[in-house]
Length: 233
Image 1 (cartoon, rainbow, N blue to C red):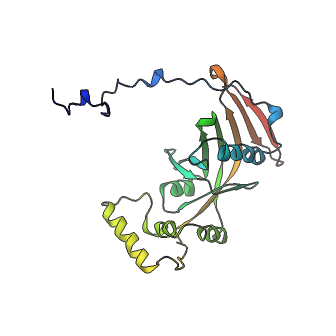
Image 2 (image 1 turned 180 degrees about the vertical axis):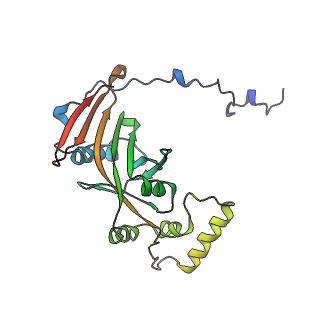
Image 3 (image 1 turned 135 degrees about the vertical axis):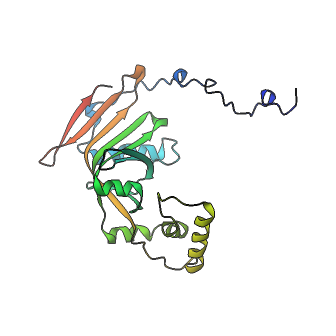
């Protein structure tokens, strides 16, 4: 048998679909619970508490990473990971190319779901609501805080469009870099900006032993108050 045979190579990756059985993967979650008496009066305050813990204690690479799920006017869903850039009583804000698939979906169907998968803490936060574009002043103010390379990237990439290869993307970026070198003011792309998701529900999910998780959900009422529901795991 040759020395480079994969059978003898400890770093070889098996292509056998049966070599790793996902059904056998199990983790026991925490015993500590999450009760109604632990909740803040409003979901944004409760989110701030958990987000602070995720950012400082949760051993998370990007605690502001969230899965944004949209559906087009025919109900076909799509999901992707986006970074949360602001949150307050008005909602949760992220930025994107307005020609992207997510933005096109939201133009026809503004209903959206956000999922914060804080796995190391056995926690999730699930937000459902309606997305609206942020104002241009707010978009410009955030754009100015981005690294220079990210500002150029917003111009170089026609997000979600089909491209012939990487070379064209790199060439577009190089051309922009020559036009706007480090230190030059980069204009805000007209096709780029923010969305603010005004929440209708916010669920706080805490993993518990034996899959008997705690799920507490805030539901927006017509008078602006919040009702809290406990969901069965």
